Amino acid sequence: MIGLMPTAPNMHIDFTQLAGDIKAWGRELGFQQIGIADTELSQAETYLISWLDQDRHGEMHYMESHGTRRSRPQELQPGTLRVISARMDYLPQAAQKSEIVLDDAHLGFISRYALGRDYHKILRRRLQKLAERIEAQVGPFQYRAFTDSAPVLEKALAEKAGLGWIGKHTNLIHKQTGSWFFLGELYTNLPLPIDTPAENHCGTCHACLDICPTQAIVAPYQLDARRCISYLTLELRGSIPEEFRALIGNRIYGCDDCQLVCPWNRFAQATNETDFSPRHGLDAEELIKLFLWTEQEFLKYTEGSAIRRIGYESWLRNIAVALGNASTNESIVNALKRRLAHPSETVKEHVMWALRKHAPGV
Image 1: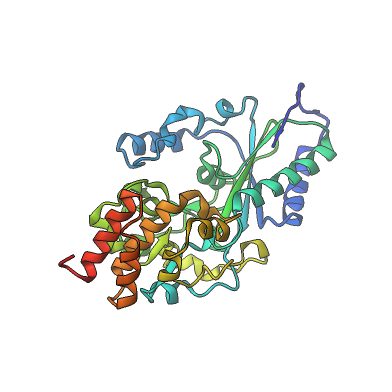
Image 2: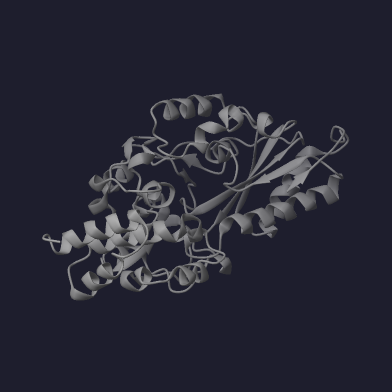
């Protein structure tokens, strides 16, 4: 994913034409949009430092361990002049409607981005192919591809590249297609012309702030990750604070509420990428069935999926919380009791919490 170039780019190249070609090649490779940004991120860096100083990153210590490499691309990849930012839609066509799953407390809700194959590999392969197309045109050049896998301020860069604006929920929004998309980047030393940054169109809307189950969007454009269900179910290891457990509902992997309510997503289009289609019925599966998976079954059914990254222990922990929030029946109580002998103290703690919800005397 890294291309090296010992000398400066050929100054006889028509970089305006090349930028147009790159955007066309990107669309041919399955990206919905390509934009180009410079590397000046001082405003975003100020916000990042403030966010870290307030400890709003929780246990995501990697957010601070990289220092300014996240907000200064040249420190991460020396020689970087431009960032080619790419957008790929992921909303699956065949998935059960999110609202139907969320309204049925006996089903497990999984964030729509994770229903198919792991997006990291898919986007990186496409970015590599894009870099190879560029190389075939201009010769060897310096580049490095990223997809949510390194200290990169991808949303700030995408905003500068004209791919959308950062909304009040801190996700990127595109005026014509909403926010159901992944981002990827090519850091490069090619002096390409930059695109016009997107304008903000959130206006007076505050639907995302109102809908957030845990009030993690503490103010417009300010997210406290420590309260966010995506953080609690994906990033946090160990015990989920009790104050948030009932609010998590049946969300066992991530949360899409702020996107579901965003009015700009009425323009969202389902993706044609079959790799993002739901696998193993995880778009609307029963909690009890998922809870009774063995670790081998968990590894089997999450192979090639972003879900696997949380591990089996967190998977059981999350589902125990969801079962605690479901309406009481004998099947749920029996399923929870079967996990009381689990070797993980974290799992047992959350199972006991769930059992107390159904049988207060336990």
